[in-house]
Length: 326
Image 1 (cartoon, one colour):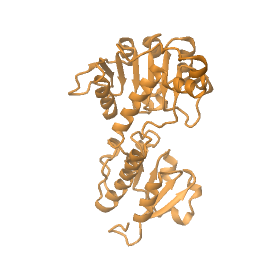
Image 2: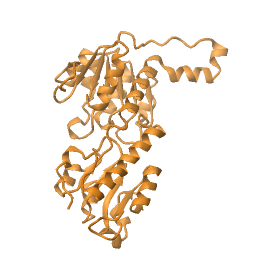
Image 3: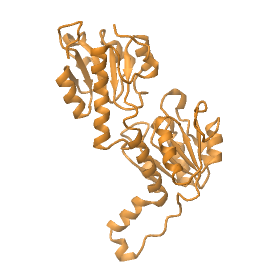
Image 4: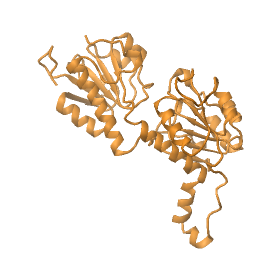
Protein backbone atom coordinates (compact mmCIF):
# COMPACT_ATOMS: atom_id res chain seq x y z
CA UNK A 1 0.00 0.00 0.00
CA UNK A 2 1.18 3.49 -0.81
CA UNK A 3 0.50 6.09 1.86
CA UNK A 4 -0.94 9.34 0.42
CA UNK A 5 1.83 11.23 2.22
CA UNK A 6 4.61 9.14 0.68
CA UNK A 7 5.16 7.55 -2.75
CA UNK A 8 7.11 4.65 -1.22
CA UNK A 9 5.24 1.47 -0.21
CA UNK A 10 4.61 1.22 3.53
CA UNK A 11 6.91 -1.35 5.16
CA UNK A 12 5.28 -3.79 7.56
CA UNK A 13 7.56 -5.89 9.75
CA UNK A 14 6.52 -9.40 10.82
CA UNK A 15 8.71 -10.72 13.64
CA UNK A 16 8.26 -14.47 14.05
CA UNK A 17 5.44 -16.60 12.69
CA UNK A 18 2.13 -15.20 11.51
CA UNK A 19 -0.94 -16.70 9.88
CA UNK A 20 -0.23 -17.46 6.19
CA UNK A 21 -3.36 -15.59 5.11
CA UNK A 22 -2.18 -12.48 6.93
CA UNK A 23 1.26 -12.78 5.36
CA UNK A 24 -0.28 -13.07 1.89
CA UNK A 25 -2.50 -10.04 2.36
CA UNK A 26 0.31 -7.92 3.85
CA UNK A 27 2.59 -8.85 0.95
CA UNK A 28 -0.03 -7.79 -1.57
CA UNK A 29 -0.89 -4.46 0.08
CA UNK A 30 2.41 -3.39 1.64
CA UNK A 31 6.12 -4.03 1.53
CA UNK A 32 6.54 -7.11 3.70
CA UNK A 33 9.63 -7.55 5.86
CA UNK A 34 9.96 -10.80 7.82
CA UNK A 35 12.43 -11.74 10.57
CA UNK A 36 12.72 -14.88 12.66
CA UNK A 37 11.90 -13.29 16.04
CA UNK A 38 11.39 -9.83 17.59
CA UNK A 39 15.07 -8.91 17.59
CA UNK A 40 15.87 -5.56 16.02
CA UNK A 41 19.42 -6.67 15.22
CA UNK A 42 17.92 -9.01 12.60
CA UNK A 43 16.63 -6.03 10.61
CA UNK A 44 19.02 -4.62 8.06
CA UNK A 45 20.07 -1.11 9.20
CA UNK A 46 18.83 0.30 5.89
CA UNK A 47 15.33 -0.99 6.70
CA UNK A 48 15.06 0.19 10.31
CA UNK A 49 13.83 3.66 9.38
CA UNK A 50 11.41 2.24 6.82
CA UNK A 51 9.37 0.16 9.27
CA UNK A 52 6.05 1.87 9.96
CA UNK A 53 3.94 -1.06 11.03
CA UNK A 54 4.36 -4.36 12.87
CA UNK A 55 2.03 -7.35 12.55
CA UNK A 56 2.47 -9.94 15.26
CA UNK A 57 1.08 -12.90 17.13
CA UNK A 58 3.73 -12.70 19.87
CA UNK A 59 5.64 -10.42 22.20
CA UNK A 60 6.64 -6.84 21.45
CA UNK A 61 8.57 -5.11 24.23
CA UNK A 62 9.56 -1.49 24.77
CA UNK A 63 13.06 -1.91 23.35
CA UNK A 64 11.69 -3.36 20.13
CA UNK A 65 9.24 -0.48 19.81
CA UNK A 66 12.04 2.04 20.37
CA UNK A 67 14.20 0.40 17.68
CA UNK A 68 11.96 1.74 14.88
CA UNK A 69 11.77 5.55 14.85
CA UNK A 70 8.94 5.73 12.30
CA UNK A 71 6.78 2.99 13.79
CA UNK A 72 3.10 3.99 13.79
CA UNK A 73 1.08 0.85 14.50
CA UNK A 74 1.35 -2.63 16.04
CA UNK A 75 -1.38 -4.94 14.77
CA UNK A 76 -1.77 -7.88 17.13
CA UNK A 77 -3.56 -11.10 16.21
CA UNK A 78 -5.66 -12.19 19.19
CA UNK A 79 -7.91 -10.58 21.78
CA UNK A 80 -5.26 -10.55 24.49
CA UNK A 81 -2.49 -8.03 24.01
CA UNK A 82 -0.61 -8.28 27.31
CA UNK A 83 2.40 -9.54 25.32
CA UNK A 84 2.70 -6.04 23.83
CA UNK A 85 4.06 -3.21 25.98
CA UNK A 86 0.98 -1.15 25.24
CA UNK A 87 1.77 1.48 27.87
CA UNK A 88 5.08 2.24 26.23
CA UNK A 89 3.46 2.21 22.81
CA UNK A 90 0.92 4.79 23.96
CA UNK A 91 3.68 7.03 25.33
CA UNK A 92 5.45 6.83 21.98
CA UNK A 93 2.31 7.62 20.01
CA UNK A 94 2.16 4.12 18.52
CA UNK A 95 -1.28 2.65 17.83
CA UNK A 96 -1.96 -0.91 19.02
CA UNK A 97 -4.82 -2.99 17.66
CA UNK A 98 -6.15 -6.45 18.47
CA UNK A 99 -8.76 -8.80 16.99
CA UNK A 100 -11.80 -8.93 19.30
CA UNK A 101 -15.27 -10.27 18.46
CA UNK A 102 -14.21 -12.50 15.54
CA UNK A 103 -13.11 -15.27 17.94
CA UNK A 104 -15.72 -14.80 20.68
CA UNK A 105 -18.09 -17.55 19.61
CA UNK A 106 -15.34 -20.06 18.79
CA UNK A 107 -13.64 -19.65 22.17
CA UNK A 108 -16.97 -19.85 23.98
CA UNK A 109 -17.84 -23.06 22.10
CA UNK A 110 -14.45 -24.55 22.94
CA UNK A 111 -14.69 -23.59 26.59
CA UNK A 112 -18.00 -25.39 27.02
CA UNK A 113 -16.60 -28.36 25.11
CA UNK A 114 -13.55 -28.48 27.38
CA UNK A 115 -15.73 -28.31 30.48
CA UNK A 116 -17.94 -31.19 29.37
CA UNK A 117 -14.93 -33.25 28.26
CA UNK A 118 -13.28 -32.81 31.66
CA UNK A 119 -16.42 -33.62 33.64
CA UNK A 120 -17.34 -36.70 31.61
CA UNK A 121 -13.70 -37.77 31.05
CA UNK A 122 -14.29 -38.05 27.30
CA UNK A 123 -10.58 -38.19 26.33
CA UNK A 124 -10.12 -41.14 28.71
CA UNK A 125 -13.18 -42.85 27.23
CA UNK A 126 -11.83 -42.50 23.71
CA UNK A 127 -8.42 -43.81 24.79
CA UNK A 128 -10.17 -46.80 26.44
CA UNK A 129 -11.89 -47.65 23.15
CA UNK A 130 -8.79 -47.14 20.99
CA UNK A 131 -6.71 -49.35 23.27
CA UNK A 132 -9.17 -52.19 22.78
CA UNK A 133 -10.22 -52.19 26.42
CA UNK A 134 -13.94 -51.92 25.64
CA UNK A 135 -13.73 -55.29 23.89
CA UNK A 136 -11.29 -56.88 26.32
CA UNK A 137 -12.37 -55.40 29.68
CA UNK A 138 -15.89 -54.14 29.08
CA UNK A 139 -17.33 -50.66 29.56
CA UNK A 140 -15.12 -47.98 31.07
CA UNK A 141 -16.07 -47.04 34.66
CA UNK A 142 -18.63 -44.26 34.79
CA UNK A 143 -17.37 -40.71 35.23
CA UNK A 144 -17.48 -39.50 38.84
CA UNK A 145 -18.36 -35.95 37.73
CA UNK A 146 -21.20 -34.47 35.70
CA UNK A 147 -22.45 -31.11 34.47
CA UNK A 148 -25.77 -31.75 36.19
CA UNK A 149 -26.55 -29.53 39.20
CA UNK A 150 -23.30 -27.59 38.90
CA UNK A 151 -22.92 -23.89 39.64
CA UNK A 152 -20.76 -21.83 37.29
CA UNK A 153 -18.43 -19.00 38.20
CA UNK A 154 -16.81 -16.93 35.44
CA UNK A 155 -13.71 -14.88 36.11
CA UNK A 156 -13.79 -12.23 33.38
CA UNK A 157 -17.25 -11.25 32.15
CA UNK A 158 -16.18 -9.61 28.90
CA UNK A 159 -17.35 -10.52 25.41
CA UNK A 160 -16.18 -14.13 25.65
CA UNK A 161 -17.23 -14.55 29.27
CA UNK A 162 -20.74 -13.41 28.41
CA UNK A 163 -20.89 -15.80 25.44
CA UNK A 164 -19.82 -18.68 27.70
CA UNK A 165 -22.41 -17.69 30.30
CA UNK A 166 -25.22 -17.65 27.74
CA UNK A 167 -24.29 -21.12 26.56
CA UNK A 168 -24.13 -22.60 30.05
CA UNK A 169 -27.32 -20.83 31.06
CA UNK A 170 -28.94 -22.91 28.32
CA UNK A 171 -28.00 -26.02 30.30
CA UNK A 172 -30.11 -24.75 33.19
CA UNK A 173 -27.13 -23.86 35.37
CA UNK A 174 -26.82 -20.87 37.73
CA UNK A 175 -24.16 -18.35 36.64
CA UNK A 176 -22.10 -15.96 38.74
CA UNK A 177 -19.04 -13.87 37.94
CA UNK A 178 -16.20 -11.70 39.18
CA UNK A 179 -14.80 -8.62 37.43
CA UNK A 180 -13.12 -5.51 38.75
CA UNK A 181 -16.61 -4.02 38.77
CA UNK A 182 -20.16 -5.20 37.93
CA UNK A 183 -21.13 -5.25 34.26
CA UNK A 184 -24.15 -3.14 33.40
CA UNK A 185 -27.18 -5.00 32.04
CA UNK A 186 -25.81 -8.37 33.17
CA UNK A 187 -28.23 -10.12 35.49
CA UNK A 188 -25.88 -12.82 36.78
CA UNK A 189 -24.80 -12.74 40.42
CA UNK A 190 -21.73 -10.57 40.95
CA UNK A 191 -19.04 -11.24 43.55
CA UNK A 192 -16.62 -8.43 44.42
CA UNK A 193 -13.68 -10.80 45.01
CA UNK A 194 -12.48 -13.89 43.19
CA UNK A 195 -12.30 -15.81 46.46
CA UNK A 196 -15.95 -15.05 47.22
CA UNK A 197 -16.90 -16.29 43.75
CA UNK A 198 -14.90 -19.50 44.21
CA UNK A 199 -16.57 -20.13 47.55
CA UNK A 200 -20.02 -19.74 45.98
CA UNK A 201 -19.57 -22.11 43.02
CA UNK A 202 -18.11 -25.51 42.20
CA UNK A 203 -17.01 -24.74 38.63
CA UNK A 204 -14.65 -21.86 37.92
CA UNK A 205 -13.99 -20.72 34.35
CA UNK A 206 -11.17 -18.25 33.82
CA UNK A 207 -11.36 -16.04 30.75
CA UNK A 208 -9.72 -13.02 32.37
CA UNK A 209 -7.12 -10.94 30.49
CA UNK A 210 -3.45 -11.17 31.32
CA UNK A 211 -1.27 -8.46 32.80
CA UNK A 212 0.04 -7.42 36.21
CA UNK A 213 -3.43 -6.99 37.76
CA UNK A 214 -4.35 -10.65 37.17
CA UNK A 215 -0.91 -12.27 37.55
CA UNK A 216 -1.43 -15.59 39.41
CA UNK A 217 -4.82 -14.36 40.63
CA UNK A 218 -6.03 -17.97 40.58
CA UNK A 219 -3.86 -19.42 43.32
CA UNK A 220 -3.86 -21.89 46.21
CA UNK A 221 -6.38 -19.80 48.16
CA UNK A 222 -8.80 -19.83 45.23
CA UNK A 223 -8.47 -23.59 44.69
CA UNK A 224 -9.09 -24.21 48.39
CA UNK A 225 -12.21 -22.05 48.19
CA UNK A 226 -13.42 -23.97 45.13
CA UNK A 227 -13.24 -27.22 47.06
CA UNK A 228 -12.87 -30.97 46.44
CA UNK A 229 -15.80 -31.12 44.00
CA UNK A 230 -14.39 -28.15 42.15
CA UNK A 231 -13.50 -28.04 38.48
CA UNK A 232 -11.30 -25.33 36.97
CA UNK A 233 -11.18 -24.39 33.26
CA UNK A 234 -8.84 -21.80 31.78
CA UNK A 235 -9.18 -20.54 28.21
CA UNK A 236 -8.05 -17.00 29.02
CA UNK A 237 -4.38 -16.42 29.83
CA UNK A 238 -1.87 -18.75 31.44
CA UNK A 239 -0.37 -15.91 33.46
CA UNK A 240 -3.56 -15.62 35.52
CA UNK A 241 -2.91 -19.00 37.20
CA UNK A 242 -0.31 -20.12 39.73
CA UNK A 243 0.52 -23.35 37.89
CA UNK A 244 2.43 -24.85 40.82
CA UNK A 245 -0.59 -24.32 43.04
CA UNK A 246 -2.86 -25.82 40.38
CA UNK A 247 -0.70 -28.94 40.06
CA UNK A 248 -0.68 -29.37 43.84
CA UNK A 249 -4.44 -28.85 44.09
CA UNK A 250 -5.00 -31.54 41.45
CA UNK A 251 -2.56 -33.94 43.10
CA UNK A 252 -3.86 -33.69 46.66
CA UNK A 253 -7.57 -33.51 45.88
CA UNK A 254 -8.05 -29.87 46.78
CA UNK A 255 -10.02 -29.72 43.52
CA UNK A 256 -11.41 -32.56 41.43
CA UNK A 257 -10.26 -31.76 37.90
CA UNK A 258 -9.13 -29.10 35.44
CA UNK A 259 -9.18 -28.30 31.73
CA UNK A 260 -6.36 -26.00 30.63
CA UNK A 261 -5.84 -24.51 27.16
CA UNK A 262 -3.35 -21.75 28.03
CA UNK A 263 -0.09 -21.75 29.95
CA UNK A 264 2.27 -19.21 31.46
CA UNK A 265 5.31 -20.17 29.38
CA UNK A 266 3.91 -21.54 26.14
CA UNK A 267 4.66 -23.92 24.53
CA UNK A 268 6.27 -25.29 27.67
CA UNK A 269 3.93 -27.04 30.13
CA UNK A 270 5.00 -27.85 33.71
CA UNK A 271 5.74 -31.54 34.17
CA UNK A 272 3.57 -31.63 37.28
CA UNK A 273 0.56 -30.74 35.14
CA UNK A 274 1.53 -33.26 32.46
CA UNK A 275 1.61 -35.90 35.19
CA UNK A 276 -1.87 -35.03 36.51
CA UNK A 277 -4.41 -37.68 35.39
CA UNK A 278 -7.31 -35.41 36.35
CA UNK A 279 -6.23 -32.58 34.03
CA UNK A 280 -7.09 -32.24 30.36
CA UNK A 281 -4.39 -30.17 28.66
CA UNK A 282 -4.67 -28.57 25.23
CA UNK A 283 -2.13 -26.58 23.15
CA UNK A 284 -3.91 -23.19 23.08
CA UNK A 285 -6.54 -24.24 20.54
CA UNK A 286 -9.74 -22.58 21.81
CA UNK A 287 -9.85 -20.24 18.79
CA UNK A 288 -8.10 -22.73 16.55
CA UNK A 289 -10.47 -23.41 13.69
CA UNK A 290 -9.46 -22.50 10.14
CA UNK A 291 -12.52 -20.25 9.88
CA UNK A 292 -11.81 -18.24 13.01
CA UNK A 293 -8.06 -17.98 12.59
CA UNK A 294 -8.55 -16.60 9.06
CA UNK A 295 -11.04 -14.06 10.41
CA UNK A 296 -8.46 -13.00 13.01
CA UNK A 297 -5.81 -12.68 10.30
CA UNK A 298 -8.17 -10.59 8.16
CA UNK A 299 -8.95 -8.21 11.01
CA UNK A 300 -5.26 -7.81 11.81
CA UNK A 301 -4.55 -6.75 8.22
CA UNK A 302 -7.74 -4.71 7.94
CA UNK A 303 -6.47 -2.65 10.88
CA UNK A 304 -3.24 -1.95 9.01
CA UNK A 305 -5.11 -1.02 5.82
CA UNK A 306 -7.51 1.26 7.69
CA UNK A 307 -4.69 3.00 9.54
CA UNK A 308 -2.58 3.74 6.47
CA UNK A 309 -5.52 4.63 4.21
CA UNK A 310 -7.85 6.48 6.57
CA UNK A 311 -5.77 7.16 9.69
CA UNK A 312 -8.20 5.22 11.88
CA UNK A 313 -7.92 1.51 12.74
CA UNK A 314 -10.98 -0.68 13.18
CA UNK A 315 -10.23 -2.13 16.61
CA UNK A 316 -7.76 -0.06 18.65
CA UNK A 317 -7.06 -1.25 22.18
CA UNK A 318 -8.37 1.18 24.84
CA UNK A 319 -4.90 2.30 25.95
CA UNK A 320 -4.09 3.70 22.50
CA UNK A 321 -7.57 4.73 21.34
CA UNK A 322 -6.48 8.36 21.53
CA UNK A 323 -3.36 7.98 19.38
CA UNK A 324 -3.59 9.94 16.16
CA UNK A 325 -1.77 9.32 12.91
CA UNK A 326 1.30 11.48 12.48
